Every structure is written in structure tokens, then in C-alpha cells.
Image (cartoon, rainbow over all chains, first blue to last red; front, side, top):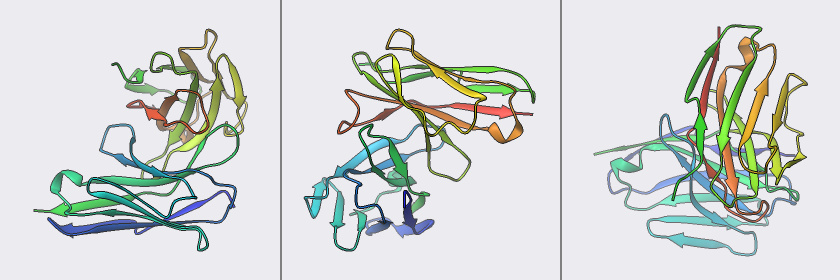
Length: 112
Length: 114
């Protein structure tokens, strides 16, 4: 019940296309859902985050869609660029500590 | 300003040895987290500090793992009697005050146990 399931495992998109990564969870106590971007040899960097009282959040080319009833959320990257090629992790927090439960990751490759 | 820093960036040790991994959080951040990331996986929570105290150590895999944060700033993750299965990237993150605040990650320490 503490898991966050992420799909797909890998994704190839043409430059200018839309990249979509999906996550699902079971624990309704999760109350904060961030997405992290990680480049090889680097630590994860916070990209965008959403709380369950909001159905959508947009920051630049990045949008989170959140479906509380389905317990699913997704990341949309519009106008994908080769520089977006990285591994993306969804996550959720639970409890009073704010510790993050991460999905398994999606490796995105944007072809020029 | 300076981000989270971790030293060393790489550590190779022999099975059975003791290792210490250091994390310097962002100045003023009271919350500090350690995570472990195995190849091809998402980070897994190990321990959370609020100030000097370990508020949640439920992710530590066994009693060979221990972490301290004696002055509420720098933290050290200590692993005794290392095993090959301990090989991973150990990530540190800090946040302003824990729950509800953004976590900023360091670059990690890649630990290899031979």
C-alpha cells in the first residue's frame, strides 16, 4: 500500500512531441505528489508538484494531471526537447515526516 | 546559494569494512533525509532528521546502518561490516522544515563494495 507504480519504464518521443508518464497509488493518506528529473550522475531535481485538492498544475511546458478518485496522476511534457532526455520519477509523501515514496522511474529519450 | 553537498562522490571499499558518508545540507534547512538508490530504481527512504534527532529511521535496512546529525547541520551515514548488497548511490536531501516543504537533493555518493 506504500507503493507508487510508474509507467512506462522507457519512452521515446520526437522533438516537439508530448511526453506522458503515468503513476498510480493505493494509499489515500498520500498528500503531496512531486515529480523529479534526474540526469546521469546527478541527484534528483524537483520539477513540479501537486496536492490532491487540485486536479491540474502547469509550470511552463510541464503539467501534472491528478485524478483523486482513480488514485492516478501523470506528467505531461509539452514540446519535448532533446535536453529533456533524463529519468523521471513520480513520488508521494505520507506521514508527518514528509519522506518520499518514489516510483520506479521512466527513462525519456527525445530524438532530434 | 550552495546546494546540498555530499562527500565523497565515490567510495570503493572491501566487504566487511566500515564506511562513513557525509552530507552538508542547505544552510538553514532543519530537515535532512537519507535515501538509497540502486541501479535502475527509484530512491528508497532510509532515515529522516528534524534538527539533531532521528525522527524516523524506519527505512534503515538493519542494524549495520546508523546515521547521526550531532549539531543539526552536517549528517554522517555510517555502515558497518559492509556487504556487496550495500552497493548503491546514497542520496541526501534537505528541506526547510520537513513535511510540506520541497526536498533538495545532493549529487549522491556512489558506494561500491567489492
